[in-house]
Image (tube, rainbow, N blue to C red):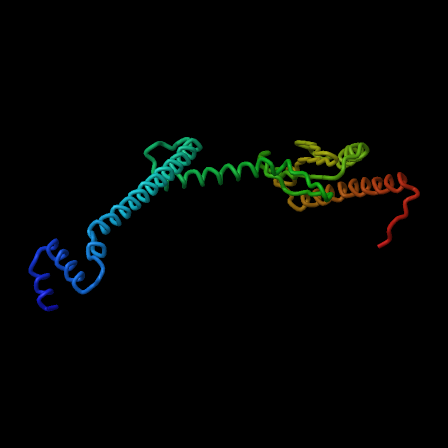
Amino acid sequence: MVYTFCERVSSSGYDDDLELLNDSLHEFGGCGGSVLLSSPIERVGGKNENCEAKALAALKNHSEAERRRRERINGHLATLRGLVASAHQKMDKATLLAKVISQVKELKKNAMEASKDFLIPMETDEVKVEPYDIKLGYGCMSYMATICCDYQPEILCDLKKTLDALQLQLVKSEMSTLERRMKNVFVFTCCKGVNNSVDVEACQSIGNVVHKALGSVLEKASMSMEFALTTSYPNKRRRMC
């Protein structure tokens, strides 16, 4: 009987097979086939529709996120084009980024060079005498002397007396202050010696003399500052290390 049933199932249409299978299950005492095998095609079709809807929603979200990302990148590129004078709309991204990086490096270098002479050490006092690159004509050398310390009214008088005593050929003199600190810069020259040539050793000797003289001014200022502190607090016990 089973063989006959299978043969009938294989030789009939799908709907006839379902009806025959339901009748056969009913004959064997099983549950109604109309409940067990009611509509498999409908169930598969419902799952496919859900999967397609989810796929379309995910694709739409991905497209929207990609659109926002491209808009954000284009906005950044437009900002960078505004920073470069020679940039244009057809310039590719790699060239634009290279030009921006080069211009930022150049601006940083210029800013460091411009602020180099205006930096004031806040914690340490210093005296420096070093060659200074300035065009003064053939046969001349220039030096820049710098003294940086806490501001004191009497130190300006000491500096003037020291410079007058050294009889330097001053080219430029600058003073800058920041809070309680001050920085004095002097540029002086050492010109022609014998046979209209610069005596390098003599110029270096003058530089050493200037350094020593400014060091004496700084030492005197430091001693007067320490004396002022000790006299301001006579009852304060000094810590011995």
